[in-house]
Image (tube, rainbow, N blue to C red):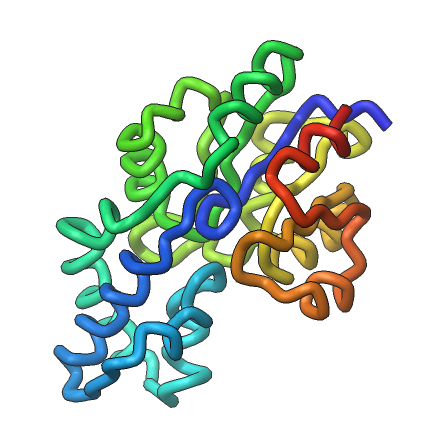
Length: 214
């Protein structure tokens, strides 16, 4: 299989956002009168849409979810966005893919405005042909919808397109759009989570991505 269009998830795939996201969640919960000191307990917020998890784990109604996301963005936009690290080897992979004339595309549930700032912060934005994410009003937060929008907007050949991500939502989104996927195990999804959704490939290390694509 020859892949031309390489879709990347952001959090847990290109970068490790652990501190920024968990601190932002703690700030948001604190504004709502909920104290949570254990950052590890909040790792589950890395990857999926925030709205879903606030409802699922804290039983917030829609109005409270809206406030929680707003508070989250207060902290994240000023501090959390920079409490983030680029995984070792990612820039090498992006360089190699660009040298081979592959189209690198960011497909994230994070708002596009934040995603773009993160790529700029790590000086890797030039490697990406397109950036696709959600908007600040909460549209296109599901990975399935984001992938579909990318495929349709840029008229991608599904047989030449592959999605790379660390959570089940990336694999589910790829499967529902009829494209192949790579589940990476160095991020925040477990092997069991990945295997349950049946990605086309699994890889333990970052450099394995290149081997699969080639």
